[in-house]
Amino acid sequence: MLRKIVHSKIHKARVTAARPDYHGSITIDADLLEACGLRVNDAVTVANCRNGARFETYVFRGERGSRAVEVNGAAAHLVEVGDELIILHFAYVDEREYASFRPTVLLMTAGNQIEKILRYEPQA
Image 1: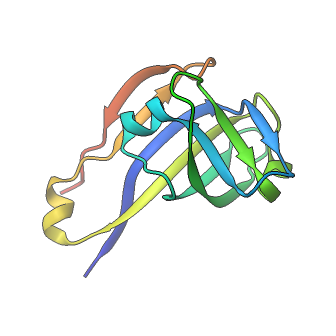
Image 2: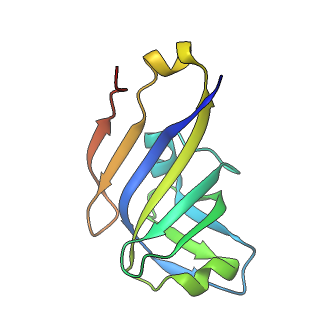
């Protein structure tokens, strides 16, 4: 049996751009992707802390050091620049993988800097 678990999370990243006329995706600074283990084309669920909107999209790599978190395409209508987002990536794991896997969580500052990195422990 496989379990769907949180693989990585970026908590309270701020939207730096909303581009409804651009291809769908979320563009995230390459430094943030590397810090939490997200990859280009990974599917993510995004929750807007301001209005409660949730949507699924996929990841584009943003310019390293830019602190970019840009929502593109139709989902751009669900956010405004400055909104806080929770970006979640899930993975399917078996029992053996579940026992040893520790999701990476980035807690962000208002300027999209990493304030703290957490590792979630699985429950027994």
